[in-house]
Length: 295
Image 1 (tube, rainbow, N blue to C red):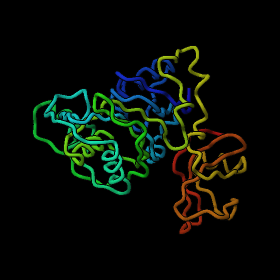
Image 2 (image 1 turned 180 degrees about the vertical axis):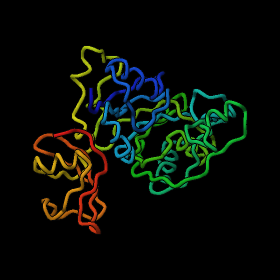
Image 3 (image 1 turned 135 degrees about the horizontal axis):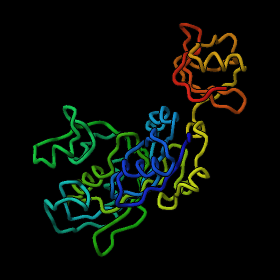
């Protein structure tokens, strides 16, 4: 079994756990996801199956959109409500204050990832070190908040919700924490749903719990559909065989007008997706990035 599966992950299961379930249902050892979701989080989790796992890194670079709910007046060690409470404080802010705080995060910002994260420090996941009581801190990094807006104002629990479109590597837990610091009362993430990855909306995702070994094939898409943002090029059967066997293709013999140097493109023979190539103006060749199917 091979292809691309768009899953709506429920709360209470890790992304690794979702992958393990797909492995069993698809009876396929090679299964991987792109863009980890915390156990508490729900929403879009793209999954690649079979040889298509070679494509997962390309989707991981894409922007993502979230709907998040933040609780003010509460600070935890994980930056979400599943963690241990570090501090509580009174909340004396308005919706206008929240809107103002949110606007301050739009654009490129410096962000420190949560201590309880999958980032590696000296080869070990930081959450493992934190659970051992070790003093760890992830290095600050630059991320981009491309859009952020309030969608639901403060309620009786001092919670509000916002939507955000963010770049790769952005932690919404960290964003919630930083918003609380800006407002002067602390904050933690109470709910999170990923609603969009690359070109894929949550309405196109299948709930993980509705998948069975009998129906999973119905939801698996062609792996090339996972990369709609890449340019496609058609080749002849002879060229397809050569490419699939590890041979580079001459740009002079391809319809390569308008391509850029080092551009990654999808290679097709008819309707068959052969793999990914990378343009080399220096060699005047289409080099092999990865092979997925044979013609």
